[in-house]
Image 1 (cartoon, rainbow, N blue to C red):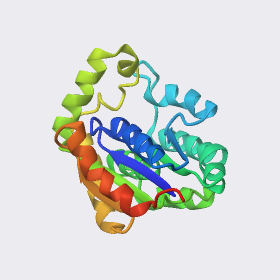
Image 2 (image 1 turned 90 degrees about the vertical axis):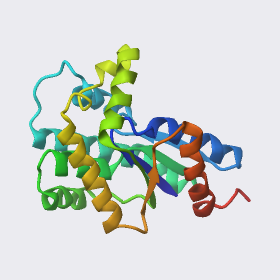
Image 3 (image 1 turned 120 degrees about the horizontal axis):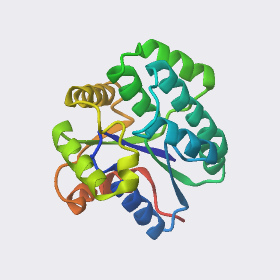
Image 4 (image 1 turned 90 degrees about the horizontal axis):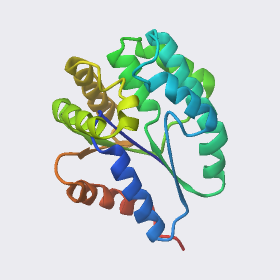
Length: 212
């Protein structure tokens, strides 16, 4: 099974996807955790270009094509081989992030995003956990994290966008959840990490039977 975690900046994706991996492994399942951008060596090089706060100006279409290049490499090198070997694959961001950020927030027509996606043969995940949080609260969390970590701050390009940008991202995610309700499941990301994971755990139990 291929499961993605999505959400606005500061929604707790990275924390919760790590907890999900640990939980599934405790249940005896073969599980790998990956991310975008940066799930491959090629992706790590692109990650610096895409997220570096000191980087050069990037046109929205250039940004879109770089994310799709990262995704294609990620899919062929990591995701599809792991699925063929029977692993559960958990990815911190994937195609819905491109739809939300480069499509809805940057203004690239969704039809163009989907056209290129189809040409590349980008598969959809089996399930998506959408960690939903008010963008203002999420940005506060994300900027506090960046202030405490120089490594996080160096990748803070999207956290530097204004609040309206992040509101468009959230609105797009919620629209996708309405469009694909069988795949995308909204999880309230407010509260403590334990409270949030208590909302995710029943979904994992429902979707993935125990090993053996």
